[in-house]
Image (cartoon, rainbow, N blue to C red):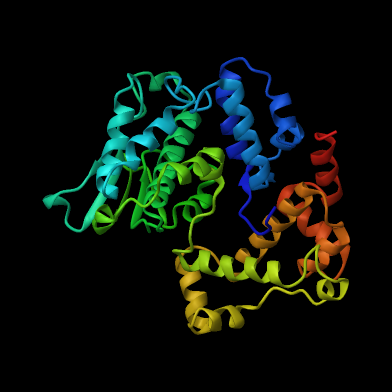
Amino acid sequence: MGHGRRTVTVHHVRAALRGAQRLGLDTVPLLQRARIPPLLLTDDRARVSPEQFARLVRALHRATEDEFLGLGTIRSRPGTFAMMCYASLGCPDLGTAVERGARFYRLFPGGPNLALEHGAGRGPEAVFALRGGLGPHEDALTAAESHIVAEWLMLIWHRVAGWLIGRRIPLLWAQFAYPPPPYAEDYEPLFGCPPRFGAPRTAAGFDRRWLTAPVVQDESTLQTLLRHAPAGLLSRRDYGTTVAEQVRHALTGALRTRGGPADAPRARHTARLPELPEVAARLAVSPATLRRRLREEGTSFQELKDTVRRDEAVSSLAEGVEPIADLALRLGFSEDTAFHRAFRRWTGTTPGAYRHETWSQHI
């Protein structure tokens, strides 16, 4: 399992479980299958690794027999997403493929009304939108359920569109027809642009030239995508289109190359995260410019450093291989006690308790 990927908030975990709870399913065994301690759900600061979240989504997929995990206004039978992908593969370019995919989902009564909008009046932009909510039974959903479905539909659309043409599609903007959720800070790294909440509708804009890009995938590459869907699409990190994401990428890269469980003990002792001037030089800007750009994006170098360390700590402890003392050194803590204090501040628990809780689910 690779290190350094962005962890998932407990709010996402709770939201993912809501459909199963609505269907009357016992969620404790599902959490145990994902190796997520049920107790973790009581702490708003808690986070899980991408692997834990992917296992949970797979378990929910099987238990609910629904590609919307029981969160949609109608059940989406397993295999629907695959058939939509097959339908899109034969298209010459991305515009035709997205149109076909959106049309496919509109065939189902109560399904999401997805639309691709582009034309003379739109200028250089194309817009992917969720029209008229999630279907006729949306009032049966809680606000949190409808928000998570809308967010996941937009995320999966964006990831699949990029996959179809084998390229990253930078979003120019993303907006959501609801107030900021508790995990609003996670939207920018997921979508690669600052989100706007309380908008008239949920939609995302991108340069319309992408619509003419040729579809490069085929049935054999689709099999690989489907083996990891939908979890892989939801937990896959987006690309560094903001300065904050480029800094994160530089910091996580340093953690992976300087020390780690497979390296010699000496390498672990010399592990360190680069400081701001070093990262600024790598991004070819001055330290002052980097500080200003991060401030404009609502963050700071120290915040990003803490986030990278936190995500790495959670992922390593969930994997259960690396000794805690080695992990503390690799993250740049000179003493275990400093690491314990920081981890408690980030997650509300200690590294030992987190590892014990996670692995007691596995026994």
